[in-house]
Length: 304
Image 1 (cartoon, rainbow, N blue to C red):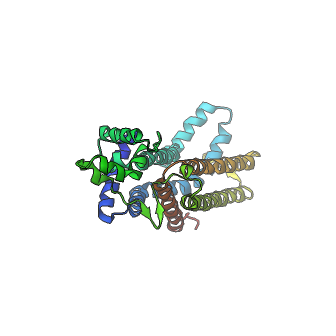
Image 2 (image 1 turned 180 degrees about the vertical axis):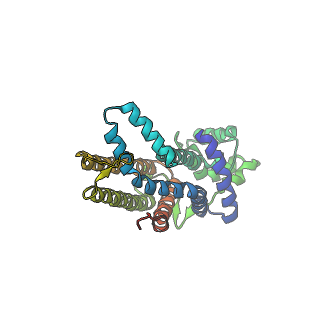
Image 3 (image 1 turned 90 degrees about the vertical axis):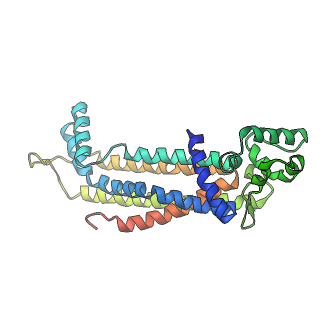
């Protein structure tokens, strides 16, 4: 599945590279286009978060009324989501898409000759064999990156090979070689620039997410203190749920933990993957931060 999406993304990245003739610039434009394609999903997700905060009171009523009948509670919960035109699994879709993007673009950046330049696998295997026979350094993880690094040698070995022109990918971006892998170049300080910038942008993104969640939960706590919970059917006031504040705190802690998981996984991969992948994540993070700021201003609560 990831190879399928990597192949599709490869056509787009190859098209952009043919226009700008620079791998780094092509990745930036590629990231921008992917963000624009996913913008409707981001808007829907933001609206869902806003709307989710508004149905908490209704859910609390149901939890009290059917606290001794879990089956009835689940049924009423589903009816509530249906009436509000919301899906309880809407948040999962975004997570699944993020994982698909993460791994598909990792495949793409790891194997640019396969997915971007569309060089047949048998030719790539032949080039790797030639490098190994000449005792050139090769790695099992990034053989196509090794091919790009030794392209001058391969051109001498294969003067009539039509694929040799496809090896001329301009990997230099602002003085950085995007084909380098930090783990393989520990003494080269330049390989840490993009990953470190990515880490900084991740902390900013996490802080923004946490601040938004804390703001929403503070509103819930404040609303729960002075206002009684009213049963919509009988009009009677329901007793306060003592565990409400603890539940909100637990949700906040869970959300904080989840918001750290993806960046930590990405940071780990960024140090063992070519810098082109870290550049994609860095640009994606910057665009996501700008997107959140803009959408948070445009998509207001009814109260606001």
